[in-house]
Amino acid sequence: DSGVTQTPKHLITATGQRVTLRCSPRSGDLSVYWYQQSLDQGLQFLIQYYNGEERAKGNILERFSAQQFPDLHSELNLSSLELGDSALYFCASSVAPGLADYEQYFGPGTRLTVT
Amino acid sequence: AQKVTQAQTEISVVEKEDVTLDCVYETRDTTYYLFWYKQPPSGELVFLIRRNSFDEQNEISGRYSWNFQKSTSSFNFTITASQVVDSAVYFCALSEVYNQGGKLIFGQGTELSVKP
Figure 1 (spheres, rainbow over the protein chains, first blue to last red):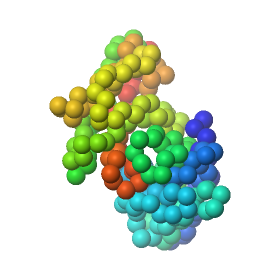
Figure 2 (cartoon, rainbow over the protein chains, first blue to last red):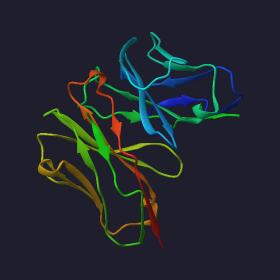
Figure 3 (cartoon, rainbow over the protein chains, first blue to last red):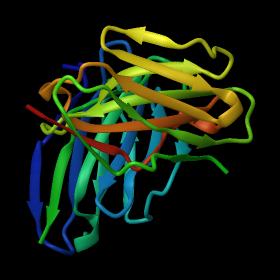
Figure 4 (cartoon, chains in turn cyan, red):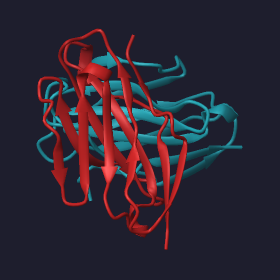
């Protein structure tokens, strides 16, 4: 158990809908990262927050947005869902303020299926 | 541009065999970090090791060992005396110190199947 929690574990929804994925980082970690794992794209970095502020952005679609709240939990919002958004979405946390020299601990992931 | 290549898509071995998973990376930075993660069938990503670019010493942890060679931009992972529980997808990842945020750039993964 990494100490990072993600809810829900599974999500099935229809095209065009909007969903929210939630992540609670390990106690004491200030940085939260979101990654998407799909069969065709592999594991890709989406976005990172540090202590409530956006720190880095990767290949995140405009239909997707995220935020980190004062209690440090984070939410990833996916809207106007398409079939291609079906993937495993991971949240990771680390203690460091965005530096590379700390490992990121991953949550169990949320499997999103868009039908 | 940063890139991680794991050329072996799938490897199948019989229990107790040694197996090496290859990882080649590309970066223009002189300071960077390399990682290995394991993804068992249950789906979670488990951190295995982090190595910085200034430390080329090989590392051994039980049956696991890592060989970092800057000259060939490789960071290979060897499992000695493999076991069925080692069956998983293994990812190599790169993070550059000076990029914003410390994001991980993953390779495509190598699926290891250890048969009894």
